[in-house]
Image (cartoon, rainbow, N blue to C red; front, side):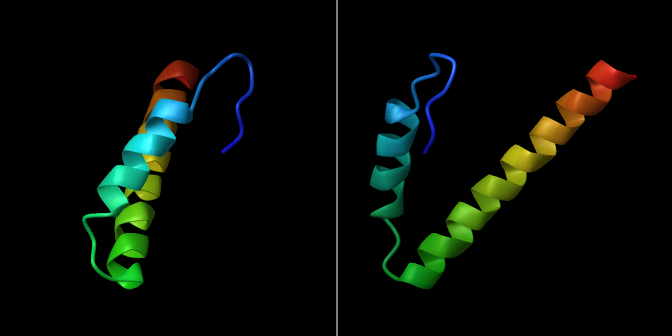
Length: 53
């Protein structure tokens, strides 16, 4: 994870590591992480669209 412009990602990274320990297989873990990434992308796109309109 890249930390730029004084945004500390340490808390988010540690929280995701703890959550990922709940999943018993790498496939489940990867599916969860992919879902989180997709949700983040959707929220980001919605924010950008609202700013640009």
